[in-house]
Amino acid sequence: MGSHNKVLFCYLVAATALLIGATAETHTVGNDIGWNVPPGGSIAYRTWADTRDFGIGDTVVFQWSNTHDVAQVSQTEYDNCAATNPIGGIHTTSPYNFTINSTDPYYFMCSVSNHCSLGQKVKIQVGAAASSLTTSAYFTLILAMAIYFSNLM
Ligand SMILES: *[C@@H]1O[C@H](CO)[C@@H](O)[C@H](O)[C@H]1NC(C)=O
Ligand SMILES: *[C@@H]1O[C@H](CO)[C@@H](O)[C@H](O)[C@H]1NC(C)=O
Ligand SMILES: [Cu+2]
Image (cartoon, rainbow, N blue to C red; front, side, top):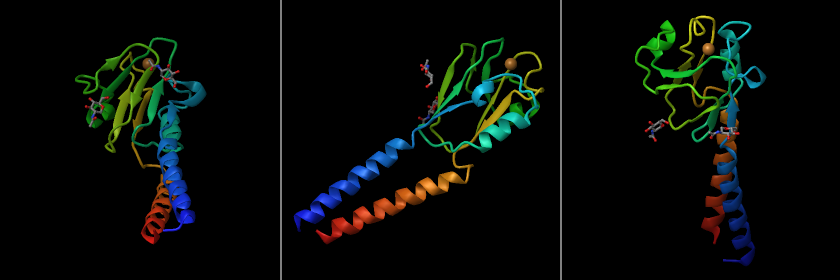
């Protein structure tokens, strides 16, 4: 194998590693609004989640200043705004940082007063946004190139 190919192969392996590392992101729920009773009702956090490209290993940050909490609940409890048996517990200290480690949807709501009914709830799911396709397409392309060049050596 030529030393030229060796250098190219090392470059592609490094580029692949960088791309994998670069996909771990931080998502602050609600951006500037934070975790609050949203002005426009539950559509606010749905819109926010739709703009985010969630991935495994990403961190979701819930930040609030008034009386709120974060309850991780089942879909049924989420739909009914009833945190009767929160599977992921209730977190009362801001910020609450949650690490995504599954492609299953996560359901979060505020269990204080009627905040959830007023729209303080959010569903977070990996791969729901279209832009994630772009990332995996690039990843696949670079991996394919690395394999192709390693076979040439
Ligand atoms: C939560 O994440 C935020 C934003 O990345 C960071 O500033 C903060 O230190 C984290 N808090 C904890 C308890 O990990
Ligand atoms: C995912 O994270 C949750 C809570 O953060 C934890 O209870 C669970 O064991 C984790 N699952 C895996 C597969 O690591
Ligand atoms: Cu609240």
